[in-house]
Length: 399
Image (cartoon, rainbow, N blue to C red; front, side):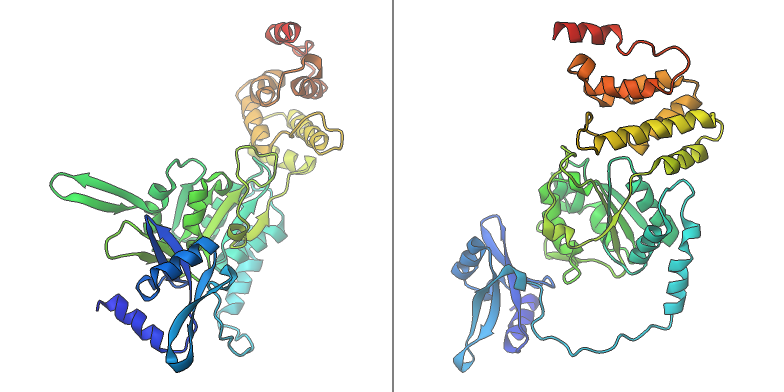
């Protein structure tokens, strides 16, 4: 009997409740407890298969005469310890005052260019200090990734970055790859993510989680669950699970809402594993402050107009009779202001950075025309007298 089976056999002899989840790997139904212990060999194949097909977990029970059997229970029971400990008062750690001081004085660590109010910044820092999984949400271009990176810098801990929205192979990114060489044969190489989760006190940024393939979400379920915190390596010989190191914090960014057509509806069970920190859309004054800070050599009046244009489009997109689907993002206003800094006029900058984001179908009634009309109100160089260029006039006429 190998060491793994010895461990399982010993576990079966005590009275501690065990609930296992059935997962399918190839044509085999495997059983794992919340801490990653494998119980496959202790449960009959038929019992495992029926539980998997029913979407239920299995709980180990002891019958008359000490006979051990496995009973189907709701999946919600998985990872729940059935023996509730007695409630005790929380002991305040000796370094609590130091932690409090860091959290409540951390606003000075926030980058000036990050438009985030003090309450939300402190909540973000506190979540990081306490080792919470953090999900930054908010509209596109509002500074989610910037805020996440600012948190990493503030905590001064090892950090890793993974853009899950860009990966085409979640298993390769999060687990690793199987390779073959003539001399050494088949071997498994771990991903950078595997190395990251084994780094104590690391901060791991999972960018664009809402754009990730569902396979990535499934892999992350046990990694992000506070009651489990392990990653299963199916391909690794003799090493089925990797424990997440102590102090590891995960920070994800996500766009949530029907207006983001390239994103997926995120699993509620996955979202429940995160503390949500919502980034706000900047108001006109905040937008102006940001642009003035980032581009001090650009005419402040022009930058103020850029902030006004953005505010008008955002107000329009959120109205009951909206004529455009979305407002201009902060990412776009920053890009436009950069063009102004490089000598483009407001009309030219809008032509290349704003208008392509809006549909031109419909001619004078199109989204693009409406946005052009807003921009024109703030142009005084005479270069925007025509709402359409010749190509757009031709397209509208042919339509």
